[in-house]
Image (cartoon, rainbow, N blue to C red):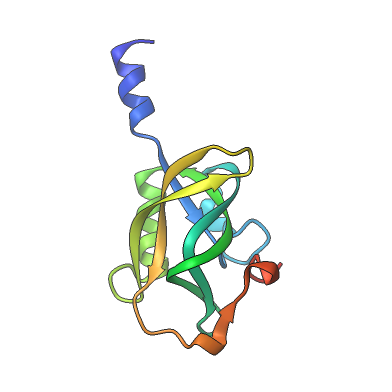
Length: 130
């Protein structure tokens, strides 16, 4: 592998999605130029119904079902705009567990506002709007 290929490999970015960006949901078209990596689980976060969309927040002992995509900077910028990055959500790096057991670092969007515990979506009722 050349030095160029090695650098290119390091530039891979992954995105963990759990709501309207999932493959069976309405906003997945934003990931049309991205490579689907697989289903994944994010630990120590809880999934909540915010409105017609979900949000996740740190929650010890909880898990969130989602999908991982390999994305480029252009796609991340589009999704930052869609998600209201910095206002409604904050894009953060997390470690997710892929179906095959591999752990990888990925970006995800964490909800910035308060959530109501009665809107918590248990793991067994996920993924979002399956």
